Picture 1 (spheres, helix red, strand yellow):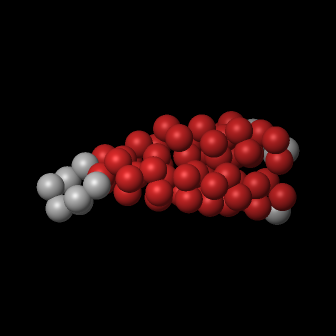
Picture 2 (picture 1 turned 135 degrees about the vertical axis):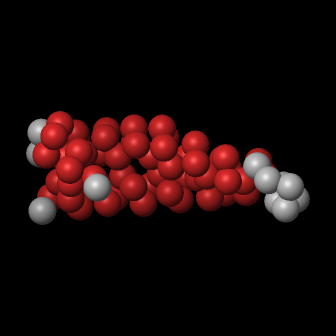
Length: 70
């Protein structure tokens, strides 16, 4: 899915890929992680989100950087 956005937005450099990865990471992945954490079965939803959201953000930035390098 990221490759479709890469071609549509003409992302070719590593810097643009890092910016796009951070934008998608914060706008979609971190928001989704926080939304998943807010359920009655999580004893500490904010701690869960604060622990896991940066992981997904960093992994998305790395994935976008790799895709731009290819």
